[in-house]
Image 1: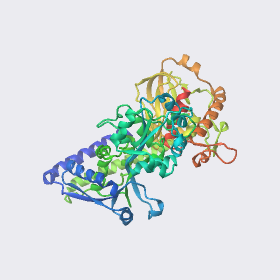
Image 2: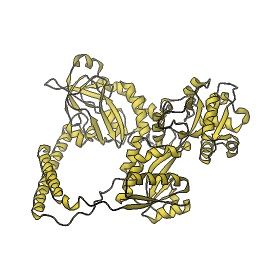
Image 3: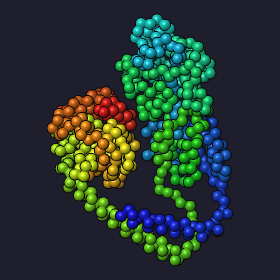
Image 4: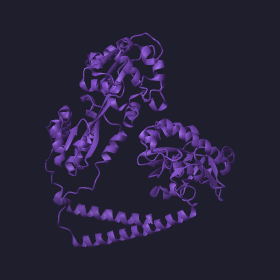
Length: 564
């Protein structure tokens, strides 16, 4: 079907191009009219917004952005009036909103505690981390301002605290440590350069400043002899794997985005409006702010967004395409040909839809009966006999022609929930057992799956490219991923199990899954309550579906990668 549709689409594209070229003589000399937009900014963001406006106008001649400084009370009125975009340094509380609003994150303020790389307790600091409660205890009682309080090692070495002379930093540290503001005010305050210099020279010092203060110009490296002080976020006196984001700038900023860093030390910069901007100039400007404009943030004391976050915010700007006005004169013959082509394409798509519907129904009939349970345990798993199962939560089956069909097991689809897309390798690629097989994606969150066998990929399951949820409804029939020409089949199946033995092994996986969720979701939190059902404490089906990307990342590293 695709081979029939593509030529039709090509003809349609050629026709459009020739039609546009024939009219080009009338319009090619027209220059775009100057366009201007007005944006409102809270006072603390006015300098940044003005810099964005100037640089955008330089990069886009004829495009003018007028920045209007507005007090916070005025910002609320401007937003609620509708039709305006505003830059603010905090999200409006629900009580100040009149109905739903559109907002995107365009930057971030991040407070970081920093230490010297010559600190004598460096190894212990990076093993244990420093908990908020230990910092609070040290700050509240002057006699406790020593490293022994922070590390619980009875070391009497005094801690020298220095804090940036900045209200945002002081407020953030106060909220983070739950210390009285009076204690924070008593700390020695310095400008950024002096603070960094003191920490560089004093191995026992801890400084609180902005992330941008310790970055080398035009690079993503930290100032010489300066390290981020790791924070033991959960207070267990151990820097767990999920908390270890302090080795470099890239890991740290990504960790901040996905929630691994204390929220009290961060603050988002928002663009807010009553509704999603619909005008072409407004959308173009905001897209620029989320791309080129990010380079201007560090110089103004703010941190830019990581690439994935930029894209996620740009996606929020996408709405119904806005078209400019086209000439009214058209060629009647061209219109008739175009109409015929459109009808042909429409018919082709309808026919393709019917075929896909037929294949989907056929796939469901081929699979075992699937009833989605409200809870998830060993009794709900489908493990067909005759398949080989691997600890990577994949299965393999040799066809009569000697090729091996492989896919994802039922346990994994119960855990992830509905798969929205899948990243697949192309035919002809050679993979080894344990190599990356494919990537399961659910609304931007992803999970890497590893191959149970070695060989060369012969075919992909094209159905998954257009209907990836087949993995959930039919993991062993319609939801297969590849056929592979095996290289070491007889040797590799020795490390796999048939259904009965594999079911016994899966009992241990349920225990591992419960342990993982208890650790990652924190028992007693509202999020954990949504994972465990009230009656009997059984696991909820599709337990990862509603959890954030940070939990998916931990599931990858602490659960999936350990299964290889």
